[in-house]
Length: 151
Image (cartoon, rainbow, N blue to C red; front, side):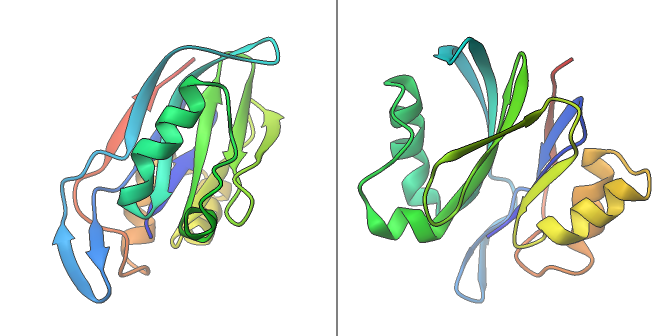
């Protein structure tokens, strides 16, 4: 999987892609800028995605047609993410792909290194530092860290 973290201002993700136990890439961009997507009075700005790369395009397509559930059962077990809106922040839930809404200042993290990142943010690290911290403990988290600031 990967690690995606949100600290209330910064959305950050690592760049590692793995296939089983093999590192395929350490420079993949897992943060996507979203354009003109309305969701119950909110405008969705960024998506940080964790999980199977082959499902990313389907999720992005579904977001643009305002459909948040993919009928692909495999995708439900292989992907999760954080979506930053202008009013709220959302977790794209693994297993269901439903969106869970949180106050925009809530610190969140998902993916295989998500618990490490949440702990790091609870200790005062920002999202980028939290992803870097998760790299020390999660073999599926690594490579280049990318981020987007959304105040």
